[in-house]
Image (cartoon, rainbow, N blue to C red; front, side):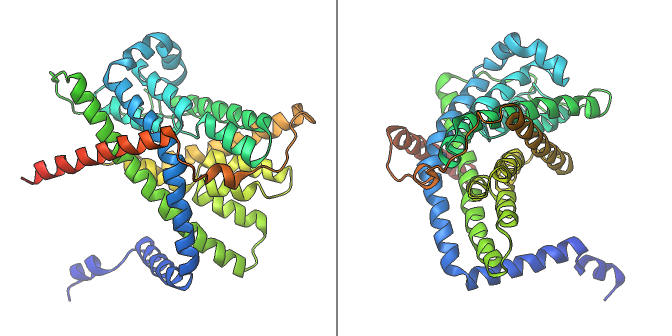
Length: 370
């Protein structure tokens, strides 16, 4: 065997570690199969009863907003301030607004649509993804604040911390990697694009949103299952509850927030802020999957998320000190809120739209094969 052949077949240290971890995870999945199945069921239930009803309609509407030219309207309203603060073209304001209002992955999906339409450069897209996505206000105030911690005030404080960290990281990235700090590369677009009709725009919006939701739900189910196996292992090793909660939060946002809410105050509040700012590997892989062929620099993205986690903790600590006695934490009813099995009209409508989008993707795949 030649030296060149050896270099091709040998694994790098990173690949070797990844291979060992994959084999270990496979072994653990067989050993802890009961926990794996139970965690997968919870993840699937979360997708059907919470994720799809709360995200999918907003995903379709935000996609339609970008395709219909609403980005130009947002640019007129917020564009000047947006451009001054973040050093990104005014059209990007719509992605930030949608990201703050609807949560991930809406902000990222909107930024990618703008990039594909030639309204953002590659460098601007990479910076926007670092700060235009985060948990939605409904999740922070309703799920985390009211249901997990029994305090709407704490949920509002988390929301303020998220908005502040979003703006702070966006401004920081402007000074570090703004126009003078990186080469701007434009997206390759048709110089004379064909205008799409309303029916085509709706079809594409539903299909693209369905594709994104399939990816999002797949990662939620996988990390829910993997998190359940990890929890069994940590219980066996008698790891402290605070460390276990941090590990769960590093993997998945919802499970991590649920785990830290069971700790003693004020540690639970600070760790919850860190989990919300980081948002979990499940969310990160969802966003990377949505980016698809548009490769982003992951080092910058992960550093930005760590910065947001630190800023969230600092803002929550300052807020609890300033409003000492006004933010009362009590026991919530997390399980009944996050895993409610009662179908709603919005949930049924979301599943109907999701089915239409999946059918559109299936038909498009058959046409491409032909």
